[in-house]
Length: 191
Image (cartoon, rainbow, N blue to C red; front, side):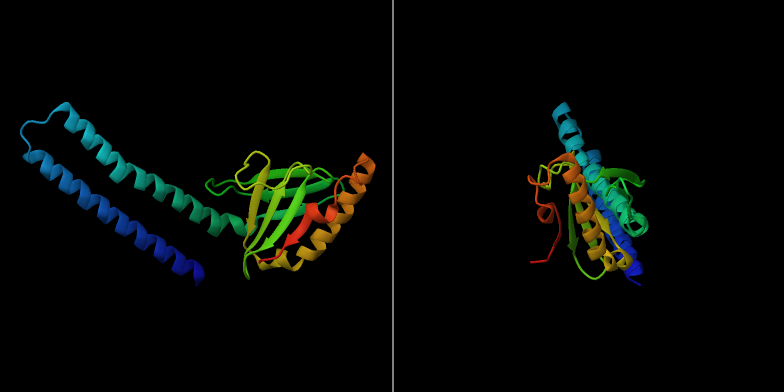
């Protein structure tokens, strides 16, 4: 039911945007026909107006539709797989309709779990344990949303296993005294 309401809202927004763009272009073209002497500057201004009024909203609408498709069809299949060597995370980036598979070896990454509601669970991963998660650092930090309740039921167990395996890996690397595992792998409570 939530998906149906969401898609109807998206369709309504799309129709309103299309009506606004169509009426604006009709106004511009009707005024353009009435003009007798059009200089090159007028063409440049008209091209800029068309770009601002038509192309930018279409690009934003395209990105919005890509994000909606990703959230509704791909996010429910994101997964975390724990192995004896590390963690495999399968996720789809927000504006791209395909999956990426990332591997993080134990002792080399930080992991923050965050609950955003009853059906939303986000995982923040930084691929360097010596750095903290940064929101706009797209090279090292990733936020992976999960839209299912099943993974959240095992969240405390996942964090416990990750802490144990990371502590073992840090001891093998000789870095156990440098990093506090409870700070690097934790559950962030909504505050």
